[in-house]
Every structure is written in structure tokens, then in C-alpha cells.
Image (tube, rainbow, N blue to C red; front, side, top):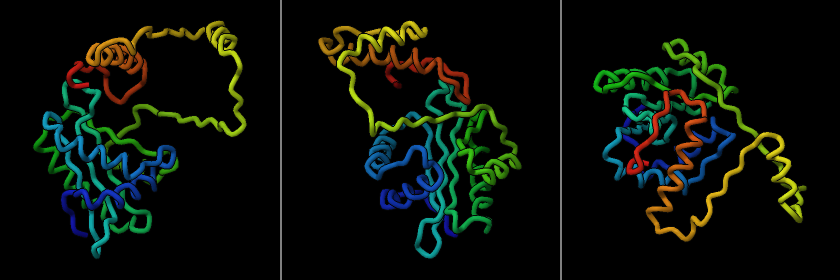
Length: 210
């Protein structure tokens, strides 16, 4: 297997590898292309992506990037995926050696990886390398095939409030200028994100970085 830096031409293969594992949140080529473009200009954050190539075909992916929620920049996100048909041949171990070399050069305190619960072998593989479970995300899907839009939402809002949910409206946001609107949305996002369990201690991101 030949390891090299990922390029734009790898995007279709990269999307296919990611969708093998993260079936609950399938990626599109368009989404990945937008992320690729943004990464070209994100000079303040560390990020590298590699692919493993066998006989001209991309069979593995490695990504190592700064976690955007850790304000001090010392938490790193790891993505390591090997094509299902190519597992058990030592390709993952070769990538892991590259990870270790990169970590020697970086100021890092925590390494984070997201693994599907269905990937029991992957959980064990990373556990043998010292990683431990810190929290578990749960995903729910709602089938809207038979959904009927209510004539009046007020009754539903009242029911939600009676159940203890606090509903806040951001009035007049469309009348604000562009920056003030973004700052209002940043306030909402920050408040919500602080209430979500993460693998890192969450610190409010500066507006400019957000």
C-alpha cells in the first residue's frame, strides 16, 4: 500500500469509505467538496488527510485534525478507515505508525475518534492502542412518511411547555444587519453547544473563529 496526501480527485473514494462506516449520517460528494475548499483557507488550525492506495485504488483514509470545540487546540480528531474488503492485512497498523510520528511533532493532550457501535472490531483495535470510551452519542430518526402538518401549532407549543421544555424565540432577526445576525446566531449556537456532551471540555468559541 502506498500512503500519500489526499487530493481533490480522491473525494469520491473518500466519501465511499466514510459511508461504509457512518451509515447514520451519509455523506455526499458536494458536502465533502465544500469541506475540502474550506480547509484550504483554514490556516489557523492543523489538519492533514492521507489516503492509502493499492494498485491505483484508494482503499484507506487517515485524517488528523484539531478538534474545533477545544479552544486551546490540543485535542485532535482522528479518522482511520480501511475498506472492509481490505481489513486484516496490516494497512491500519501502517497508518497508525504515521499517526504516532505526527503526534511526536504536535502539542496534543487528547486524541479523539468516533466509532460506530456496530464496529466492534474497530472498538477493540483502538482499545489495544490505549484509547478509552469517554461518551456515547445516540442517533434517532423520525419517519415523516405519514406526517400530517397540524392546522394550529399553538396547541403543540403549549404541550411542549407543559412538559418542561423552554421555547425561546429570536424576534426580529431578519431585520438585523449581517454581522449582528451572525452574532445572535453565535449566541444561540454557543448556548446550545455548551449543553451537549463532548469528548473535550467545551469552551465558548470566539466569534471570529466560529
